[in-house]
Image 1 (cartoon, rainbow, N blue to C red):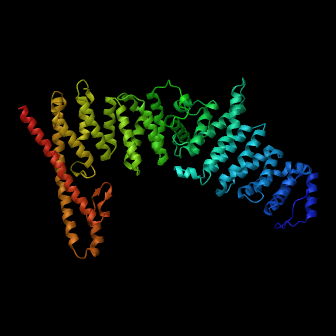
Image 2 (tube, rainbow, N blue to C red; image 1 turned 180 degrees about the vertical axis):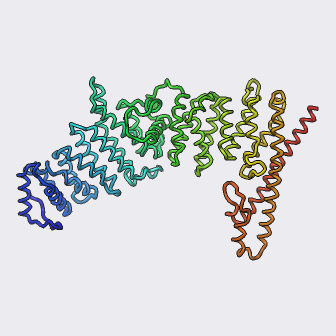
Image 3 (cartoon, helix red, strand yellow; image 1 turned 90 degrees about the vertical axis):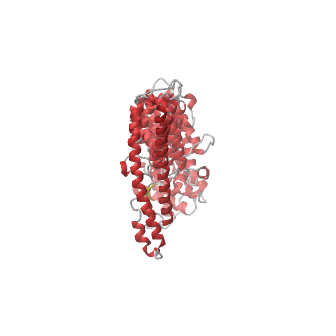
Length: 600
């Protein structure tokens, strides 16, 4: 039985010539075949597929007389056959049968070479369909290999995941259900693809002798799992209340690791991956961070995790992963980092974390990255969650540790909102320390003074931008008023005299700053009102808008970029704010006078 003919650029043959060529191939040993023979065989097969004659091609391949030809050169037909399947042409069934026949007939080594080349050269628009088409046949070929199976499996998995990394990971529930690019289907198929090899590792673990090939197979499967954790699982939205496709894939990965004798506790809590996984350290950390998230937040396989580890030890180990996730600019990473931070803290006893932990790099870096989320992240839901986690972290620190943490944040945050929140927490600790039996030196003794020195200070002295520092200043004044009202608890300590000195210096500097700022803002407001009265405002607007209050920044936005109406509101609001500050100062001085009269 022969193949059809067609004009093929320089190749013009008739049926008799084709039959002669086929007969020559039948009589030629494999080692005598030339590159042009392979190309001509591929051309003949492509002609069949182009003309929709997949049935004839299949019949040729299955002809026992052509068995040696197919065994020697059949691999070159893999690419055109797979492309025809991906196109879902009219010869679809015949093409699939032809691919199956080739995988049973051709040399496994040659097939692996052809399949890997096909994967690596996949068109971007055909990635998912090509992979779904190839996986069953690739599995068959790999299982038939006797030598270097582990290495070939590693190459195949790496190539497949490299192609899948080009597809966008669905983030929302709707995107995952639609699975427009087929990524979810591919990863679930990939999980099924690896199962026979996982079973082989399990069988080998039961034997008394473990070979280097067995160890290499386990290593390649471990690499696959760690790559999968980093992508797509770290990017995906996962929720145990919704068993989505990627959730099921995550579950498969989490069950595969112990199946190949990889202890989750050793991967997470002790030294980095024992084997040389040839991955960048940051990539390895991302993989383990996702592993920690799936284990401690989504609780996948948590029942098999040893209960012997204390919550503080787990938190200490997880801090490395929390820091890795919070330092990312990707929303999915930050969300997982916040969730892991919260879950790691929940089981820790309140007021128990010692100050020594803050000497660890991760314990310093994670809160600093959390602060970056609070101050720089544009997403309100992340900022709100971050604030809740910050408070939970503060609640878990013991008194000395809280004291050190507050000092650090006041020195390094450079953000009035964060500093205001810290000042509020300092007041809470003061209030707690004043309760019967709760006094401690960190918030009611001499150690309080360094904190108050940081709270009752203006970063740029008389030139401090009061609007941008308004939150901290107002909270600091409220704290000062509270301390003066509760003076009985402080007069008996050595703190009182120094507190009065700090208070006097702070209020004096603040009054000067308010006076300068009020004069400046009032002048700008007057100039703005005069400018709005000019009939030719449109002609002069450009020049004036560049000149008006050009040095003022409110909440990180230049007022010169605002409309005249908004500028007016901002300037008026600033004057009202100064009035509020002065009213608080006046009230503090009233309380001071009242207390002095009472004492005398």
